[in-house]
Image 1 (tube, rainbow, N blue to C red):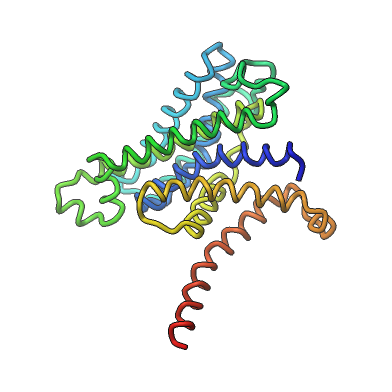
Image 2 (spheres, rainbow, N blue to C red):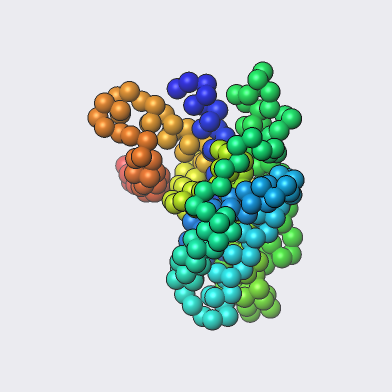
Length: 299
C-alpha cells in the first residue's frame, strides 16, 4: 500500500468514525434502527457545498450542515413517536424523501468545489500534504468524541441511555421518553451529516449518491470496534467505534490494493461486498470466542 493510499484510508476512516459515532447513538445507545443515515450523509454534503458556493465560511458550513442533518433526525423521530409509525419504516420514508430534497438543495446531481477554500486551506502545504488533512480531521474526531462522552454523562444524556436500555423503566422513572428519542435521533443524524460535510470538503464535490451504503459502513465500524474493544462504558465505547472505523477502512484499502485479490477479480466497485463480509465475520467472531471458552471450561 502506497503512502497516498494509506493516508487516504486514514482520512476516510476518520470521517466515517464521526458517522459511526452517530450510528452508535441510534442503533446501540437508543436501540432505534435508523436508516435515515443514507439520506442525512448526502444532506450534510449538499448543504455544506451550497453554503460554500454562496461564500459562507467552510467552518460555518459544517455547523449549518450538522444542524440541518439533525432536523432530518427530528422528522424521523417525530414520525415514530407522534404518528406511531414503526421506527424502521419512519427512517426509510425520510431517507427516500431526502433523495429528492438533496437534489432540490443542490439544484443538480453534483456540485463541484474544486478551487474553493475549505477548512484545510492554509493548513495543508506541499510539505505536509500526505498527513495534514488526517491530523485536522483527527482533531475534529477527538473533539466530537469528548463532547459525546460529556453529553452522555449529563442528565439528558443519561435519560437518552435509559430510554434505549429499558423504555418502560425509564417511563416509570418519569423520563420523557418521546423527547429523548427525538434528541437521540437528532444528535445521531447531526453527526452523520457532519461526516457528509467533511467528506465533500475532502473530495472536492457533493454528489446525491454519496450516501449509498452509509448505514452499512457505520454499522461495520461499530461492530468491529465492539468486537475488538468490548465495553459498555461510554468513554471506551466511543473509542472502540473510532478504532473500528479506522481498521475497517485500512482493511478495505488493503483488500483493494492486494495483487492476489485483483488477480481473482476483486475490483474497487466491490467495496460494499467486502464490507458485508467484514460485518459477517465481526458478528461471528464473538460467538466463536464464546464457544471456545465453553469448550475450555468443560474440558
